[in-house]
Image (tube, rainbow, N blue to C red):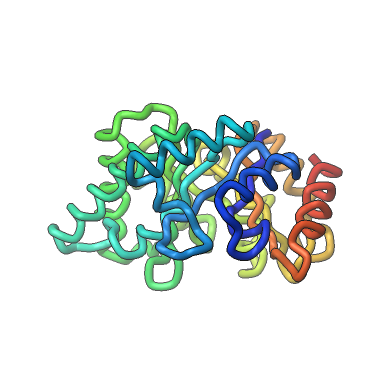
Length: 259
């Protein structure tokens, strides 16, 4: 397993260098960057050469990789549409993101599908969305990177997303806490999806801020992860709390106690 952390969890408004330093000191293998134009987020650096050079220099200096891009910009340019021009813009944006992630050595890309973007099988936008994602992966030409839909739907819809996408690099970014908060069984869904569906995993508690104090059954999740043979990234998206470093240390120790 490799352990990553969302860039915003280690403290508010940290400089980019300090994020890499803290991630290293806390024992993480990588950072998940968020592509949003905001002072506390640095993912937009991935889209220009100077920004990528800065990120790669910090990666090499601190020995902390960039696990993934959380493509917040997908909310504004995506393929979840029946409008051909909007669809083409979304696909072009995803190709650009895959190329940027490839240059940074990322393992994956998160595509948020929440609220109005939540997958529904009767939605006429769903097939073009997943077709656009599939075509972007094929055209970008990186056979290793995974592109992951993050959503909080039931298992039947998640399985349909994987089936309709129809590509071994396209699957689900599986969030333990989000799914438990909506009354679902994280371990059971992991088993049902297998590694064909589960491409990356967000570590998060439900009903509490700290791991082990809420409703996520980490022992059951551990067993399910081992049963399907998942050995990829576990990316922390836990609550930062009033003391983010203490919370991260607790959460890391709690996860390692099970895994």
